[in-house]
Amino acid sequence: MATPPSAGTFLDALVDEGLTVVEVGDWRDHNRNHKGPWGPVHGAMIHHTVTKGSARTVAICRDGYEALPGPLCHGVITKDGRVHLVGYGRANHAGLGDPDVLRAVIAEKTLPVDDEASTDGNRHFYGFECENLGDGQDPWPAAQLLAIEQVGAALCRHHGWTPASVIRHLDWQPGKVDPRGIDWKAMQARIAKRLGTNKPVTSTPAPTTPSVSLSKLIKAAKTDPAKTGAPVSYKGVATVEAALVDIGLLAKPYSDGHYGTATVTAYATWQRSKAGGGYRGTDADGVPGRDSLKRLGLKAGFKVVD
Image 1 (cartoon, rainbow, N blue to C red):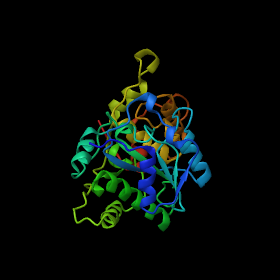
Image 2 (cartoon, rainbow, N blue to C red):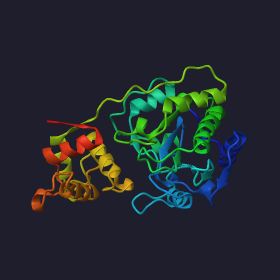
Image 3 (cartoon, one colour):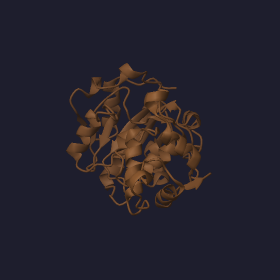
Image 4 (cartoon, rainbow, N blue to C red):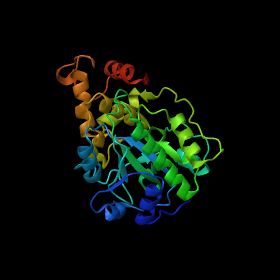
């Protein structure tokens, strides 16, 4: 368990590690603390932004969206290796994740595969968004990778953590893929070397192929939030939403693990597309069918059950 340091101490830890830090506006007091507690902190989480252009990326991460207010992280690591501090305190970056993963991070043990989204990650993790399109093709410059290493080492050094406390968004929340394109085992080794520790780096087991239950997904898609009070959520929704985000049909802020209106609209667009089956009329209603879901699974790497 670790109490978050003051904003000034947090800044000093980053600077002392050799990072070039840019203070953006009122970052010290920009947070979501009115929505819930901040701390104890147990680790740092690394993301990619799916954006291009440093200025635009920093602005989005500071201000957020209509559906997801900022800050969306504590720091933005741009391609030039600078860390732009946009908030301090509770931030909208981690979302709900797997409690087994949190327990493993606290114990600094091997992470289990994340298959549940029920625990508040915004409370317990520092968040760093990295400027990258997240398509597996956008490069990670050496300066940016060095900054990720330095950020991880700075927080581990301050709190007495090992590199096992620096994790990826994909380790925490089902359906997430960020930060795509980084060799994470190598990154943890870099952090360990910087810290001068011989402690073993916790490795993440090879992920299993996720599965999506067609019957549960149909139930989620057909549930009317206006009548029930909230849309149905189950882990397969997050997998499908992540696939829709990856192919550009769903905005990332709406990928929240609930089969709401935005997801229905995005899935209907997929159904109408040639790749999704080319459905028309009521056949493209945003409610998954086996054929269109199987096509999406083949594209995104999940299997359809039921």
